[in-house]
Length: 273
Ligand code: IPD
Ligand code: CA
Ligand code: CA
Image 1 (tube, protein in one colour):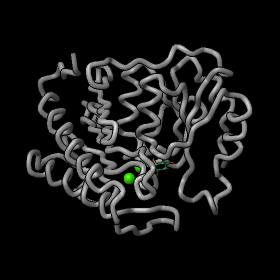
Image 2 (spheres, protein in one colour; image 1 turned 120 degrees about the vertical axis):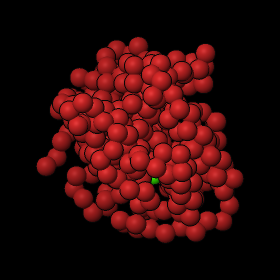
Image 3 (cartoon, rainbow, N blue to C red; image 1 turned 60 degrees about the horizontal axis):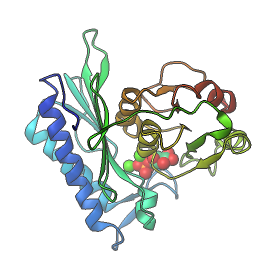
Image 4 (cartoon, helix red, strand yellow; image 1 turned 180 degrees about the vertical axis):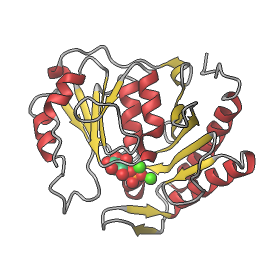
């Protein structure tokens, strides 16, 4: 049985998010390994392609047409972020470097937050769609995390020495001393293996699915993590900052695991000023 939203208010929003994620994914599938216009953003290694923009346009126009009052925070700047009962946080193409190189690992990420009673927002829906594998990871708060008909659960691993761990590096890695390399070394020297696959949203989903046991990264952005946090939490995983505090929505410090290995992960990743 696939995911069904038990909250009637969320069911139509989940359907819309699924349609838009798959619509953007279809663009990515079609344009994969074709000639692309590629520009740079914050650094020479921070790429954006015409496909990032086309996917974002499709998603944002779809939301604006169906739900004009909702707020939108999208990586490439479409839509309008404001106070509203629902807020969509969108990474139209997570894994742009992979996409530009023909490395088959990228996705669409859509997180939806709902305004809670105190005016704060809580995570309500998360969808991460990998168009090449046709894998749609999804979660609704309280209803679990799912991949197709399978309810997701994190791995049962308890031994750090048997852990497969994922990470990534920020686009300022050439010039910043806060470069993740000390943590990277600590993990390489102690865990079973490490992966740097280039899509933060999929990395979080892979912890949720038990494909990796832990994942950490620094200097991410809200659109990288909005969907993945909920999918991971609904799969029984844990996400915190680098000292075990509540995860920051900004994605500045992301330490995630199956829960059992969280202390072992935090021991090895360093917070640099
Ligand atoms: C990037 C990817 C990558 C991570 C970077 C992100 P983008 O997102 O998630 O894995 O290491 O920090 O910025 O630019 O491909 O959307
Ligand atoms: Ca991203
Ligand atoms: Ca992106």
